[in-house]
Length: 562
Image 1 (cartoon, one colour):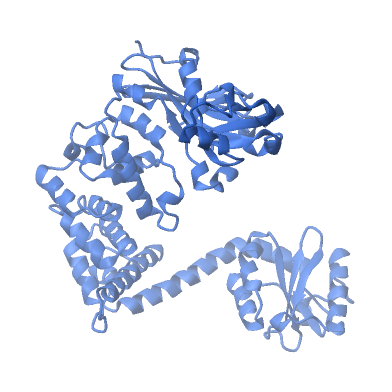
Image 2 (cartoon, one colour):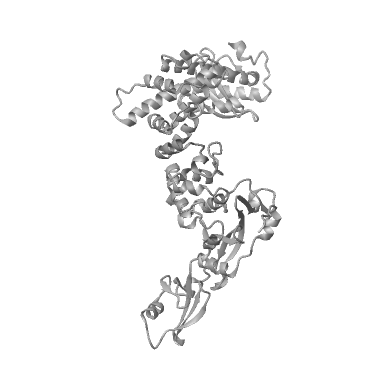
């Protein structure tokens, strides 16, 4: 069968669901046996939602078996066995079930529809079943959500648009996502649902046995994904989610069939990262025929990699440093991660590569500046090395910002690391404050013209920067420090009220909404309320601001008062 390239051709070729699909879809829902006892007539009227049979079952039979006795004795909400299909069902007495409103169910189903050996369609649908109007033999209804067109190394996905997508598409119209996604939208209700109500179910998965996907290692992927999820999402846990992106894996398996080899040699983390949207194409050639060629390694390098691989962090450190140091081995990367921890080892590797440093010299320098004499455990020693590495990498960032000459050995490896770090940090803060004030300067002048004021006893002062506002909060023991960034951006305005005879002593803080010339908050130390005298001054001042901040002999500015 030729490969279809256009959306219209693929959508037209999507096969319809068969009666076999409909029967299997019905079996996915909770099976019920609705019954009504007609004792006077000697039978029980029954409706089986699983096999769709409506029958009368004689209460009195010549030969009474154990199954007959259990079926007749079954009461509302008890388990029983359908005499026609043999399936275990939940009994529902019709007069107690009433309108069956609480029996409504939704399912997410994936139908496998092969079209020859090299073409597979996946039809993903929301299925719905209820018994409204006491229609006990109702059939499930479904709505197609996503269609996958899968051929060797070629996959297309089309999702059905609904009005909540805000994509400007009409309901029912198909669109193609930019990358391969899972078939169903995970709404808030879905994420908050019980584990057993999440995920989706396959219908006709065994049909793949006659296609090019016959040997898809789904069980291996499920195991690898479970382990990977526990490692990367330890606060949630895989089994609490009860789902695995199997459809997405099937699509990627069609694109890169050699990922099966990674699963078989316990390198499933890389497959799971691929499925999770992080293909790492700079490090891995997914089309390569063998695992060692995928990673671009020689046989001895790959053997060392397999022997020492622990997690993605040591792999990333190895990939960074193998380009920086010739002959660098995976076992060395593993040792660095074990000694410095995940974050510090990544920062260390990036610094060595970016600055083109000698790795051995760098490690010796860090070891020399790490005090491990009081460390009694391996964890304490790792924390000590980690702190040193983070201090050093932070120092390099500060030094680069200050435009130090980092090509000099005595600059990039200072003798007194902690002292050099603290000095560079203080210098960077000063430079950043100066730059921030330069951006703030125009706003500062505007605020002075609009708000600065004095009546001879009290005065309104404009903050000169972030640190001024933060210090105000510290001295007066309130939360104004958290407003510093918003003030600098113009989202709000923070002002200081001082006594004219003590202009440097912090006194009262005021928040004003510029657009409305309205006071939002005004507090003294420890969020104390203002006195009547202080309130009178604030009222006089804000009225002056609303009148246009006109300065004359009666309304002297704070600058003249000072």
